[in-house]
Image (cartoon, rainbow, N blue to C red; front, side, top):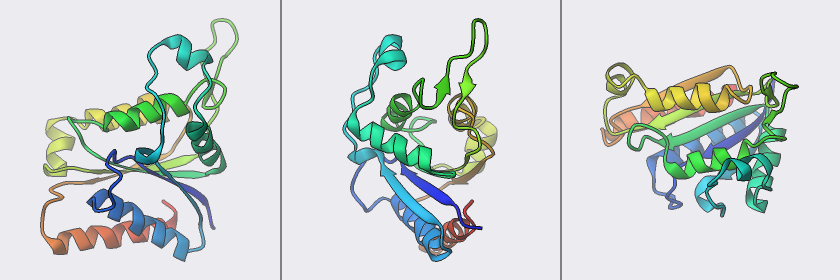
Length: 194
């Protein structure tokens, strides 16, 4: 069964020589080869300001680049999110993007008086792919993968996205053979639309 997939490249450096970009490309190649429909959001190439108040988040209009990204997210059945681990979490630019994109009216809706938020992106699934210099098991077990858990629970889960799967790739400066194995694995995940 084919899916509509949005690949969200969250590396803040727009240069193409980053390993995380190669992983996203391998995923997209696998998905395209399997017949999935693809669209890409490259956060580093979008122009948008950071939000500075609750009023901006509640009532401000997103910039045109973010509106176009919202159209892609709304179209997608599955999100594949790629980013490097910076200071234990996603880079600030990616967090700023999610704050801009997942606004009331698009990602969440107001419930009635005293009611909780309505999750407007329910029915979509996601895969988060995180690259890091440390071994992935150290991030998961010693540090508790706190930044990843925050993205899953407080951002994606808050707007209704689930199930959410994760792929943590540690020691990215490792051997070329290991890096090639990860590229092959991401191609396979893309083919399966996971």
